[in-house]
Length: 331
Image (tube, rainbow, N blue to C red; front, side, top):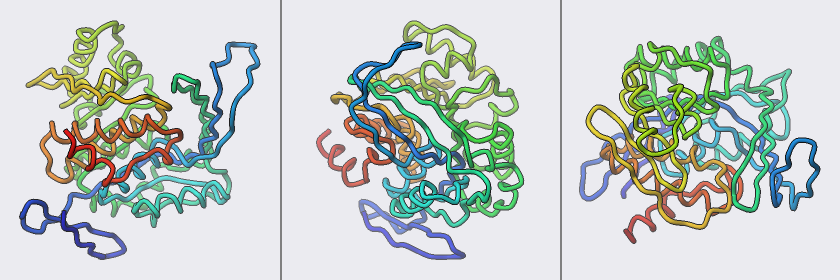
């Protein structure tokens, strides 16, 4: 791949060509979402109510679903900018530095004068499963006024990626604004909201829930693949163009008006599933931004996220493009 970096109006544009193609502009990605410091506790088994257990280690790793997705997209060579809010503290400085190192434009991030950077307490057991408690902090200041102040980024981008760790009304505003500007919108509905209005669902290019998020959004109990398809169909009837359900080690289910297809996960030994879904969303968008076919983008995302689960942590586990390309060569 040949690449050329172009600087214009404080933004970085990436132009590229592959296999003899002419030099062209890579489509641009705006991530709007949360930035947290993940405080990770490794332990043998998850504690029950009223139970005290011993942990193995305590580590601090930059995280937050928005920052994870922006960082992953940057490391995979996407042309990425991010909107969100951190505190004026050490955790916030670490987040900004980490994203800059990954190639993300953070010039429009807000630094709060009154709230600390968001935190997430993550418990990871020996099986690699995790439970997470989030303290929003400065993420609450990613509000509509802030988004309106940075409307230039809505115009700048081609894709908008969103999650649900910033104020609900900010997510809805972002979707409506991006839709009005004819941007392609990818919503990772995590954590799943109590509701998403049909008019919002109709604006989405992709919605990417996991199993539990799909069941909540569709109000449908799922026990097997057929159930996941039926639940996805319920969302399609409400207006979503494509439903991509992340099913962990089973892979990813794509359901739209044309197809129902499982893309199997690459077989790896799982250590920690933190940020695997975030990496999938980022890699999917990067693939689409490079004009890959839908199938190619999903496979690219599957491979990228399969690397994440073999490592501990959120942003610390994200792969770079060279790692993903090496695996693709072996397929």
